Length: 206
Image (cartoon, helix red, strand yellow):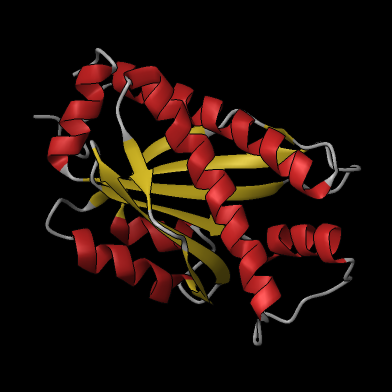
């Protein structure tokens, strides 16, 4: 049985390659969505303890956009994208022609845009996994939350706390956007241990 916190270097390299493929797919899809050229740096893949996760996301009181998707069929678990406010501002501005956005009062249009971002990102990553493994993977409608890091992370911690104290963290960066500072996205993937073992087996690194 493959366990969280016990990945070897080969297994982490395979997960990094999945993240790389998923990131490329996401960048292409988002570029079409907002009509701008988007590149992505090679993602960093790490196993991280829950107690360190909030700090890695800017501290427990940092306001972020969380998009959570349930994963079902051959794999069971949860995928959560944590987006900087700057990232969502960028997409809002490109799609809606606005210069700023107040996250204290999101409209139905705003939520629809964030939901579509969630669909694009989750499909990009999970399609990469499905194409490499032949597994059937389905996703739920994204659930959206704009809150402090500590509050957002409490959801997967409660739901999957019995699996272990560590999660898989994939950090990506959108680059090459008119010399602006890179905008990072962070993906947390939590699979049930039987699903994790199945995934590693299909990838040949169990």
